[in-house]
Image 1 (cartoon, rainbow, N blue to C red):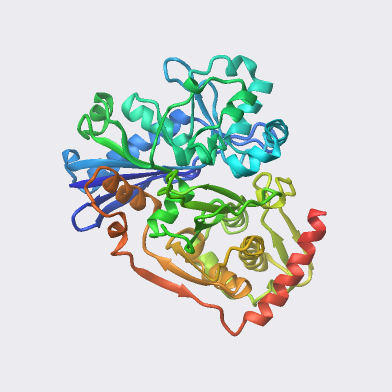
Image 2: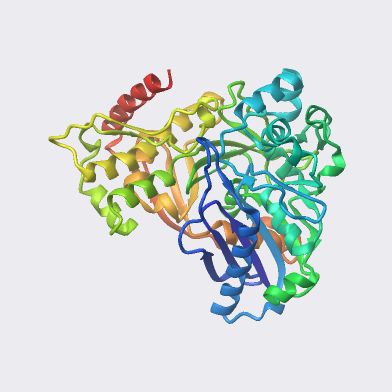
Length: 493
């Protein structure tokens, strides 16, 4: 028996096949090879075409089945991880009415503030656990305010993963966890929030049927079998946003545990059984994948929009002929602190940890006689690490103890300059685990389909491939970070 995991990001689609009995990863791949385009017709906007996601997912599945010589009939469960906070609205035929407004789009900040005021602080704090901010509900309200012609055509409101599950099954389904990420979910009552629906002036039947993250909420249709060979009726038995799913892939399930990611954006995600409400909405609390109304498992998430996207920007503009490995070697050749150069990586939309301010990226301290592009790459990686440290300080100020976290062996955490800078400046130990989001989604689907009896058993074979522990550079880099932070405060103000 084989489980298929899909991880829909904003840069690519990743898929993995996992042999259920042995938990062996048969193969993983991504599509397309180059990063997916994010359309930005206006400053602060970010959109993608949901149909393009679907086309890429089908191609990725076809490729992995072919390259591993896997019989599609052996696939017995499917799990979907997806980019959080995106909005997909479809008409009565299931076709997208407009492009998806994705996670890093900043246009709905004002709409979220209007909704937060209309809903009232008591419900926001105690039922929703978050301000409306720039999340999916606020994006939907923006459509209502600015594209009424599109709002009136809505048949269903979905998250990116819900749209993919719909394309596989022709069934409209979603999860309580997903609705909490969109700020549609009432934690006190375990339902869609009546107050959010009232402010949006939208009927509950415009939303999919809701269920748990680990459950066969829908089953594949004949068209999906035609496209991939995977049998009609295969359960789509797990679904989660990318950050809760990343935590799952690392085996982060219980309170006191934390996960980190360093892809296009950077995230620290800590699990607890209590709400860590932040009145400034710098961090947010969602339902973790194993959350139930009677057994709370909550994920407090801190997001930094501009992390890996900055590294990609540096590589594309200064080192286009180099690999990331070569860029890392260049960064290592420059001394700690990049000779006084400071890089602020906040150029990918409004940053939640600055209460949705749009401050953009900047470089400070350039000396034309001393600095060159090698200092740029070092300062960039250190700046990304320092933005994580700033986030750690916010989480710790809310009473969350964070001295250790697990991360996947990909993206930024393959950079020693970045990871060791984070460990030293943040005084946190980091274990790098060999796994990916698509592998986590595959294992989650096997559990949701009943193929694995105990969820934790699905992650018993995780391997630690690297560790970053605070070193004797700690004092030096904390002084460098302190100067970086002081400059940041001036930028924010």
